[in-house]
Length: 134
View: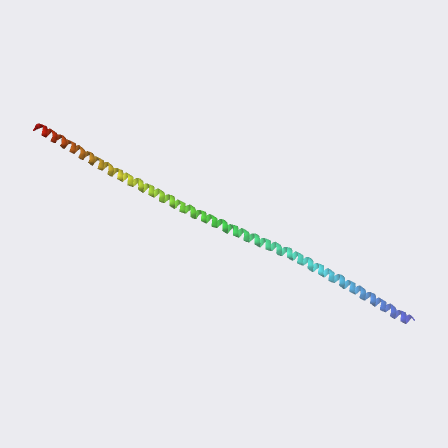
C-alpha cells in the first residue's frame, strides 16, 4: 500500500512540477513577447523621429533653394530694369545732344537768314535810292 501511495505521490508531484513548468514557460514567453513589443515600440519611435528629422532637413533644403531662386529671379529682374533705365537714360541723353546740335544748327541757319534778309533789304534800299537819284 505504501509503495502504491509513493507512486501516486510521485505522479502527483510530477504533474505539479509539469504544471509549474508550463506556467513558468508561459510567463517567460509572455515576458519575452512584451519585451519584444516594447523594443519594437521604441524602435518605431526612433524611426519616426529619424523620419521627422529627415523631412525637416529636406524642407529646410527646399526652402533654402526656393529662397535662393527667388533672390536670383529678383536680381535678374532688377538687372533688366537697370538695363532698361540705363537705355532710357542714354536715349534721353542722345536726344538732348541731338537737340543741342540741332539748336546750334538752327541758330546758324537763323543768322544766315537774317544776314541774307539784311543784305536783301540793303540792296533793295540801294536800288530804290539809285532809282530816285536817276
